[in-house]
Structures are given as structure tokens and as C-alpha cells.
Image 1: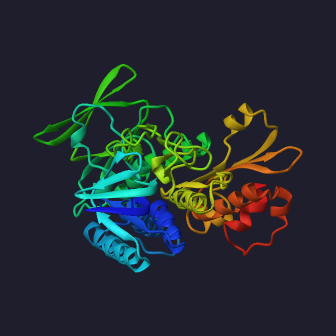
Image 2 (image 1 turned 90 degrees about the vertical axis):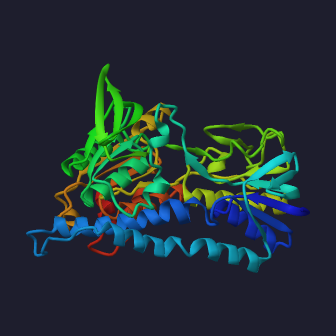
Length: 450
């Protein structure tokens, strides 16, 4: 079948859906295609289902922390029931998303999209001619190029486990490994985490990361740093993860090894070369300041598939989708700004950041003061038995602007938004200190951080 459209969108996640719906509302004839169940990574295989697991882990952790403080202990995770609960969120999504496209008048295609020329996309037996094409295909686990890589369990597969293995080794020290390691450890698994560099979670403040690593080890998570994984081998006892550390070979026995060493744009088989679209395997489609392909003006990209300079986060993907839609409908005029974009590692407790770290601020020649403290003895931590909490805030001298904020502890994922708003809108530290927050809350601690 051959058909003509004003817009063909590749992917059905938040970036793709944002563009498709906006253009359809403007009267465009829109098609959308995805080879995976409709809904995208966040709703089906990433943020949302992960946070369901994290929420249960937090509940168990809070009960355990309050043992001897008026709360009886004994709470635990029942993995099969937890996964069943998680599926109550994810299972309805593909049908709901497809129905929403149909209601909006968007033509949906199931199958892997592939460019056959600069303006034409093939999806199975369907040939779609388009005035514009948006690539928003999301991301996939990065290729590690090690022997036995096919034996690794992906984060998507981890979220579908009906039974949690007894021994789990996580390869890599990023978001995925730390978040799932904390859930698995509280569910009773023996957890090992291997990271090739001296510091995991490189996008976060080193001092707070060190606190989180120490706390993770207290939870019996075996974190091995400066340890490079070289091979995964299947054995009669399960799996052996072969690694090296400081010129010394070390082996780790596991029932499951999980890929947590980063993700890359899922675009390599889209036929981008046939469309004259420049792209990078690790960064995505090369785009200009308007999210438009630098080599094919018909094509735009958003979310994890775009080499935009924005962090690979769901809110950023939705934001970039809005930017692309605005430029498609009204001509190139909108440019993304990532100033004040917060990010969170959903460990228990969570680690959050926005703005600059000290090293980056110094490299930019900024003059600033640093407010930094470990806060486990603060009332807000003690009342919930929180033993791992702290903060670091960077305030620019002269302007009094907040240029970086880093938080560790419960509710950090929410409190960081106050700092993000201040950075993005130019609210200075003295103005934040004038705020009257509800008390006693984590937000009411802000005045002591500034």
C-alpha cells in the first residue's frame, strides 16, 4: 500500500506522540509507526514501571528504618505480586495509546520503519510518502562488545521477571544499575554491582555519590569500582562474569547478569543513510538548533534519538517534541533550552541534581560559594530514621544566583524542582530564603541550604 502524509512519526513514546498529536490538531494528515507495543520506553519499559517497583521498595525500607521507633518490622517484598501490580499500569497502555491515535485521526502502523529515500518511509508492505518525517524512536541498551554479551538481561527484561534470581550482578554503574540494585537488595537478592571507573553515577556530585555508595554497601550491595567486565560465561551453576581490576582478574558468580551500562539511540536500522540523514551511533540524529536534521531538511528528531545536547530524560523528550511541533507548524523559530533541567537516581534514598557541579563551575571560571552538609542528624531525617542524607548548593558570588544544587535523601526528587525553577527563572538565593514553606517538610530545610 502507498499513501501520502503531511507527517510520518517514527516511535510512539512521549516525543513522537507530542509531535503527532499537535500536528494532527492543526489539520495535518499524520501517520505514526512503531515495531514495539505502542507507548514508548517510559510508559512500558522504563520510568513508570520502574517507579512502581521503587515505590514498593521505599515502603519496605521505611518500615525497616523505623524498627525500634514505634513501628513493628517484618515488611518485605513479594516479587510476583509486585510485578503483577506493575503490569496493572503497563498492560493497558498499548491499547489505550492506539485508541487515542485512532480517536485523533492519526493513522497508526505496526512495524519497523525504514527510509527508502529522503522523503519516503517503508513500514512492512506500506510505503509512506511524507512532507516531513520525525525520528523519535527512543533508545536501547548500548552494545558492550564483550564476549557473552547476549547472556545479559536488559532492564526491560528485568521489569518482566516473575521470579527474582537469588544472585544478581549488574554490569555498569549508572542509573539503571543503582536503581534496580536497591530494589533487588531489599527484595532479598544477593547483589553485586561492577563499574569500570573510580566513581559511578558521573553526572552527580562526587561527595554525595560517595555517601550513596557507602550506604549501598551497608545494604549488602557489593559495589566493585575500577572493575571492567570482559566476558559473560554460562556455566552449570548459572553465569560467571569475568572482569579485571587493576591488572588483576576477578570472577563473579551469578544467576543473572543485568545490563546497566548505558543506552544508545535505537536508530541504526532505520535506513537513515538512504535518506541522507547524518547520524551518530551513540548520540543520534545530528540536528541543528531547531531540532532539524543538518543534512535533510525534511527530517526532524526528538528525544533519545536526537543528538540535541539535551539529557536523555522523559520530560526532555516531551519538551523537545513540543519544540519540533512548533517548528513544523510555524517554521523554524523555537529553540530548546535545557537550563535548569533536574535529574534523579531513584535509589532509596534518591539522589538528585540540577545545574553545575563544582568542577564544571570552576572550569567555566565562575566565582561561587559552596554550602555542603551531611544531614542525617537534621530533624527531617531523624523523624523517619533516615541515615543517608546530605546536600550541596552552589551560589554565584555577586549575582547570588543558584548555579547548582545536589540533594541526597528522601523527597529529594521533589525538592530538587524548587532549585530547578530558581535556576531556570533566575530566582536568586535570597528570594528563595524569603519563601514561607509548609513545616516540617524537606522544603522547609531550604533556608539552611542557602
